[in-house]
Image (cartoon, rainbow, N blue to C red):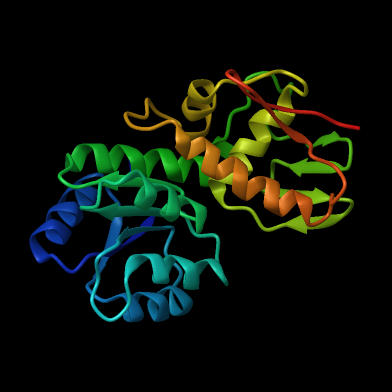
Length: 236
């Protein structure tokens, strides 16, 4: 099956970049390779890809800075790749807007699987909400409106600027208000595959989503932490 999706790989280690390119091209993705962060930002502005595989350690501009710059003008899905394994580096990458995170050394097949999963989340017609009567129908609950066709979320008529992971997370939580979802459940539903790693990725996405919701709901905390269990969405 032809994907016709364009993947931008930003990686200065040529062997790693070439390996990823070969595996992605075998899965029928179009691939562009760039080895510098500053050039990557300009490329994204000029010719927006469908997804970015972004290394953290880059010359001229590191991956964290690239992610921050891209997030100023685009919600293109970003998967960060790095040799750093400390949890703080992982969480920082997610908090500045990355959708996923993978550490070196890695299996190229796993990277391809994650690319497919993130692209599914970014593609509204492929998103599935388990309890929704219609995956393409709108969801209106409280002050929040979710347009599943156009992949948009609004609060009191004002559009939220969400990444694909944040949209998917909101979609899952809003589908069953007042139900507590564990971190493992949210990982499975939001990441789209069996995520082998730390469950605090969801904490970072929740933090970002809360910030964006609070812009238009300053006096309401609609996402509640249930200690020892997980998260739920409530409406006042």
